[in-house]
Length: 168
Image (tube, rainbow, N blue to C red; front, side, top):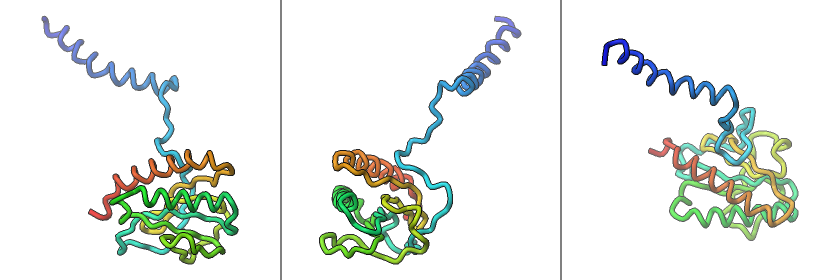
């Protein structure tokens, strides 16, 4: 093999993957969406006080002023999610932000929110240790849709907890 042939093969081996990647992106053959299932908030909303000194870094927040049937389903589902976390329960705190008092759900805390809740009403929100709201999930009207929402919350929460390096 002569010198020019080797150089040509070497350049092709280096340039071909780059050209293919460019074509995939240009023609839209690649799904550029995120892997999260919830809706990311577009602006920074500090919903809860800082919990950096507390071992429970992640908070699952149910935001509903009046706790009607969808809210009750959400509270029950978040309770099941919390219990289903097993040993990872030490990293998660369920929170309810609303006017109704919760006697049936002792694991929920009810702190005062730092900001107005008008944009987050009737949603389940994942909040980090600094109190920043990250992902939102709407409260489904039917109970059958709540299972899909619970799976989405669990998948996103597990991903966030696995990538969290603040407790290390």
